[in-house]
Length: 343
Length: 198
Image (tube, rainbow over all chains, first blue to last red; front, side, top):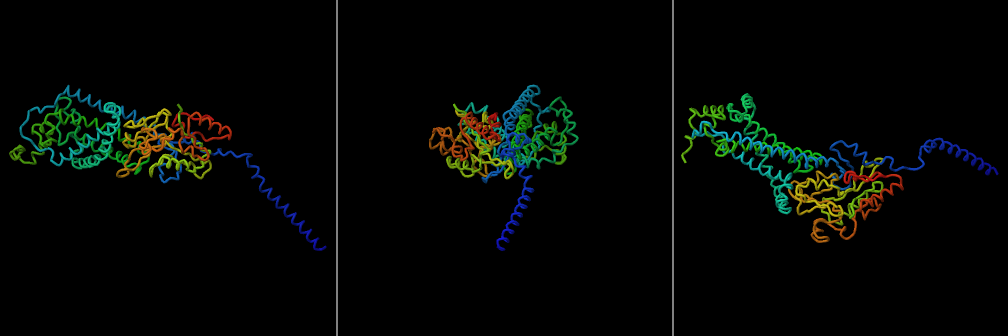
């Protein structure tokens, strides 16, 4: 009996404790329960394409995690491919077309008006060394590479409109693939040539006072003055810097494209291609002028890069300060030709 | 003719990567190339979604516009395909593609690009339908056999839909109407300049 009483009392205590516990739990849990929504909306915080795209800056891309080893595949959508397309199929073609055809037209008109710039006093018959064999070798290595790079590069932008309809898709693809390899591999001797020219001619390419006068007097191309020049006049210095800076820009951007993902992502490659294309077409246009003045534009000019020797009267007309300097160095200013062995 | 499209219902995708595996196997895709991949956005955070992405076979495809040798063509089903015989591996389609679809085998020095490979919507290439040459270059031509791309056929949750654009858009709309939410037809605005009103 006492035992049962004890059990009953114990049960009562247990009941009371349970009630207290339930009450405590209810107190703690009530706010949490009240916060639970009646149903779950799993899309409440879901990523939305439209919002993500709107939040993107230019050059941005929607990226996430991929489980395949190729991390680049984590880019889901990169909308800026459209801007690059518009550039490549629109802007670049217009800029390139106008720059190159415009320069050609300008040179034709200039030739018709001005004609070949003659050696006014006629040839002296004696010559002076202007470019060493090494300088000419570097020049022609770079020049040959440049011409092939230019043509194969123009083919990428204009070939499908100009050449493809003429020779058909199979021949055009065969040609374009060869052109691509030529473009890739000849970039190396070209880049080396640019570096060598940079070092080789830097001493004579720093702008100075004579350039101001040269530019003011139209370089002798416009008007009939003969502004004095040292070894390189302002125009040649400009060509030098175009080659050095343009060549460097073309080479750096080109290598970014040739070695994809070594240094840039897709957005970087789009930028690199845009710079590469614009620099290249302007470079080509300017080189057309360089080729013109070095060949049909001026009597006696080609031989400086051809044989390496120029006529003394040519030198006196175009580079008098340089001629004086050279003659002072060699002594009495005796004709250089006399020092050559008879052939 | 149908206007074939892909639609990935991100609210159903469980990132199982079966589509990726199915694609690789069905088309004997070479090592290192993934025509399809599953990208998880906001991984591990609230609102995480996975999207299976491959070539979207765009309307007015950017790859075709920028290709210097014009090696792309669009089939009567609006599938964007290309000729590996004409491709020169320049990489331009990769710069232009919004979806990272073009892939290049590394064939030369310094990982230089070989001929481009991408999702064909299981529709092969310019060679004769079902020919050995077609299979070796582009993989299966299921479309010619009246079948849809294997990635979508395999999808365990029917998240990835393939087929005529209007039909799969209708299926997606009904799903959204029934369950009450949908994170949208990923890539459609970019690829087709249209989205599905839900």
